[in-house]
Amino acid sequence: MLSQDIKTKQMENVGNIGLRGLFVNVLDRMRSFIFRFVQKLNLDLGDPDKDKEFNKSIHELVTILFAVVLGLGLEELNHIDKTHFISDLLLLIVGYIAVVLSWWFYHKGTIAGPKENNVLLYTVDCLLMIVYWLLINLRESIQRLLFIYAAMFLLYWIWELIRICQQLLEKDAEKVKKACHVNLLFFLLSLLFIELFYFKTCFIGSHITYDSVICFVVIFILVVSYRIPISKIYGKNMRAELQSV
Image (cartoon, rainbow, N blue to C red; front, side, top):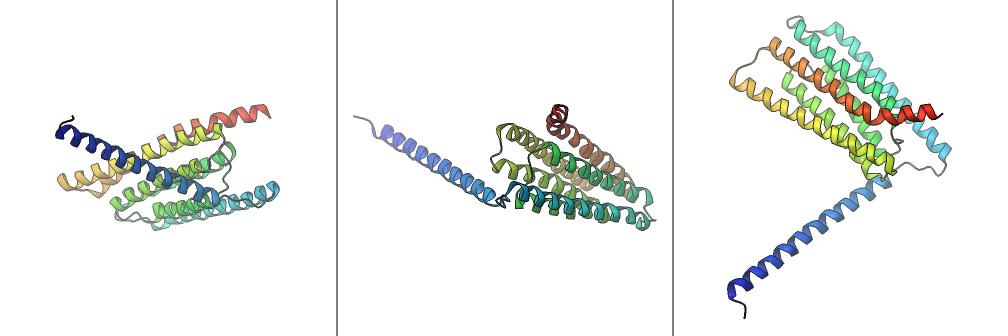
């Protein structure tokens, strides 16, 4: 006969296994629901030619929005804070660099990556346009600006997560998963820098010029270095495709 302690432990193990199984089941159901929801928002007009034409129109709209944001960036040159000219100019320059690189790699990604045919993807594109506008126009608070850059990397990550949910072809899915990992890494790095900057401000103090230079250097490194692995992920297949044409 089993002792009472052994019976109690067995019952606890059964309970733990049951709770763990229930938790896994709930996660699987949530994952399945999210995948189905994303796939229902795929754009399908019933004709490949119509789908292609519609996607082309959306890409043209995004290109126009990029042009508007870049134009506003040039206009901001006339509104630089004269009191802190160097610091404000540096923040404007790094914001402009982020937008220009995004414009370049957005068009490169539409050629090299999986086709963009989901309402949620286009929604994220539009949200990114708002974020880019904020990067260029809201430079008064460095801490607020850092959160905007973190939001930019967060949207990059969400964008790739949506693509994963679309159940792409195996070769495309592998690229998207790698890009998703890169986006998550840089989002976490941006949050880490926000924490470090916050502690620096609390314990050392703040100086707008020095803080702006530090932020310019760190953000510049993040924005530019982020594009290196992304370019490798999406650029390799594009070159191979172009050579095979």
